[in-house]
Amino acid sequence: MEELKEKFLNLTFEELKLEIIKEENIKKIQEMLNSLKIKSIRPKIILSSFIIYFYPEDVLDNINENKDEELLFNNARDLINYKNKDNNSLFISKLFIFSINFEKWIQEDKKKYSNNLFHVFHNLTVDKMNSDDDEEKKKQIDVCKNVILECAEKIGGSKLKNDINSHKPVVVSNLDIENEYSNAFWDVIKSDFNNKDYSKIITLLKFIKIFISSNSKNSENKYFFSITTIKDKLENNNCSSDEMIILIDKILDLIEEIDDSEEILNLTASYKNKLWENNDFIEGLHNSIDLIKKILINGLNSS
Image 1: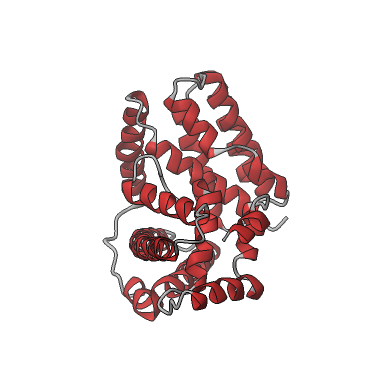
Image 2: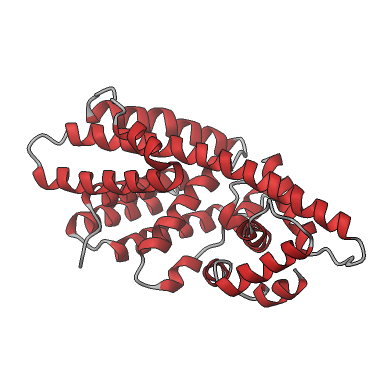
């Protein structure tokens, strides 16, 4: 483990993801497991410990509040940093403990992700029903739904895909959806923010960062802000209102770069004016999420 730790130490997240699936590294872990006479642990599970240890903010939701995730991170840390080569029994126990807790975390993550897929697929189905005669929009929605079904098949096999596809949504109007989305969800976000509960804010910022990282033509844009830094600043009352407004302003700039259609450019200009006039971070976050939602529904602009 020490040799791989040194090898992986200075890699970026994307580089590390590629390294842990390379045959040479899988083979090295398999040889280690064979030497310890362990047959029930897959090498890729042990290699995953490096991702969890080096980049927890990219793979774990909230290590400070989720006890299972904190435990998994600690297991990965203890396993990777173990140096007592004379005590194989203790090392073997660390391998099994990490493997067991990793499998448990994966199952919980799959369950959560599956629920999210149900929710998004349901909303897209409702949006399509409310699209009337807009055939182009319906085609884009079908593309999005197929992507969701592909993701579902990858994480839950054909059963999850069929369950999602056969799910019958309750049809409501676009206005009802928007009222529920705005009045309930964002009221809770604002209340939590005012009460210094930043968990939902952090989740939304993660979503924005993933969207920009996945769709920006400039690879450097994935580093334009750190979730961990923002979280620490918020929780330590060390993040000014101006900093949060500037962050939203930058997010809107990057969304413009991803989709420079006239509709998005006009909306972005309007949202920026409101942002600086009202100096309201939550409103700016809300508008940023709405822009991304619109881009995903309409299909990414190809220009």
